[in-house]
Length: 322
Image (cartoon, rainbow, N blue to C red; front, side, top):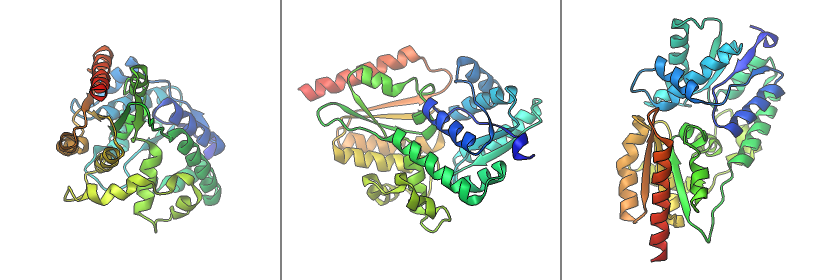
């Protein structure tokens, strides 16, 4: 398939991130099939085709990809983990392509994309040179860095958000968690963002060919949280996959910064996040940090979630006032 023949789609990953991805693809002179916003119909269709106990991001992105294909996409980009891991997300692209072809979606290519092979894949799809693709990638990642900046409120209530990356980034999937926290008078500090994820990968692999991105892109400079990496890793016997160990790392940093509460947001049945639950529980208990855990699947009730968040914030306000 030539670049001119491609109509490129991708599953939604939050409104802002999806707009940045669209701009990146447009800059590569690719025809973009923008995914529709996530709705109950998106989720219903993804759930219908998915294994019951697979994590929620799989179901949502599958429904989103189906909608892209029905809008005319013939090339799909799906995020995948950057290393061999026990996290099922490494298999999303292969599993979803297999399932979609089984139910009649046959005329498309599926490309799994991660930070290590992003330039290679996008250069191949677009027909652009390695250097031109690199230049546009750097510009896109700098745009992400600006969107991912977090604010700490020295005079208010700061709630740290630890999350699996998809649940943390997509405001529909997490029921506008950050907006709800602000509504009830707290400042959300979301550690689950794409910038931190990419920075961590490239800082861990300084001799990777993408090292030039690390030099050229602001968002790949190490921050304070990186210094907690060894402390977090020492709790485990190896790699867990997903964003589990980085979440423990972020919690240790938030603890030392004096965070007022923690929200742990995870897909129901997520293996990496479930594995770190006892450690998050223990650290929060040892340091008297209030913890609210929100497992997410298609059966969540937004009204119930809002009540839990309001109660959590009010409890922290009373605690600080006493």
